[in-house]
Image 1 (tube, rainbow, N blue to C red):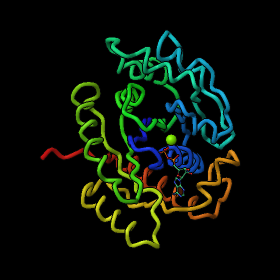
Image 2: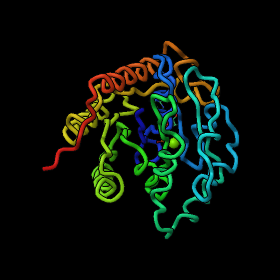
Image 3: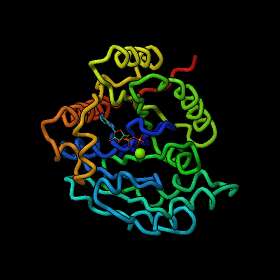
Image 4: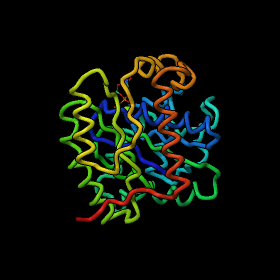
Length: 263
Ligand SMILES: Nc1ncnc2c1ncn2[C@@H]1O[C@H](COP(=O)(O)OP(=O)(O)O)[C@@H](O)[C@H]1O
Ligand SMILES: [Mg+2]
């Protein structure tokens, strides 16, 4: 089982879009996927038609709440979800200053998710590096960083990579970067292509070959409560996320997940 936290502390970089559509595209390829929505704004849950995930998700973090019974079906083949709810907002406060507060999810993964038959757990993180996101980084085996293919997108990246290094040192030594994904790239503008080149210079081999192009179907799909692979199966958005799923699956076969080189 691969568990991948989808992160970037910048809002609008494509985390939720990537979580939902990569999950659906992996599902098309007969993988069993669990989405874990760890963003109190619940965008991934709402996208998949789940209005209120309830209080259970808060209890997972603050009490002896069981993770496994929060799993719901999404109607998307192969894809289940642990939904978010507004109750998640309480987690930051509840865990603040609590010894081991960063490791709650790591323990729950160990207690409740081992032995389950998911091939992938994709964690949709919020756009902050608060305790919820730290919990995701401590619990996951890998991270996928989404980077918006526009100016300024790179500035936060160095900070993010530093945070990942700190997490490795303190909470999760095995954490690997599965890849950096350029999202929302408008291939008609020189600027966007330059930004992708910059990301490549910066991230080298971490950059996924697949580039997610700007595509209107991706922005429309949430209103229809469907992943793009079902809402507009022939769109560029669907094509791109299917290509990403193939690339992610190739990593699985080669068992190659990039380790950050120490320099
Ligand atoms: N490739 C894309 N093409 C067009 N719109 C996109 C694309 N990726 C994301 N969006 C839109 O950009 C906004 C932010 O994306 P989202 O995935 O919610 O980012 P995050 O979860 O990182 O905040 C959303 O309105 C989404 O519909
Ligand atoms: Mg989001």
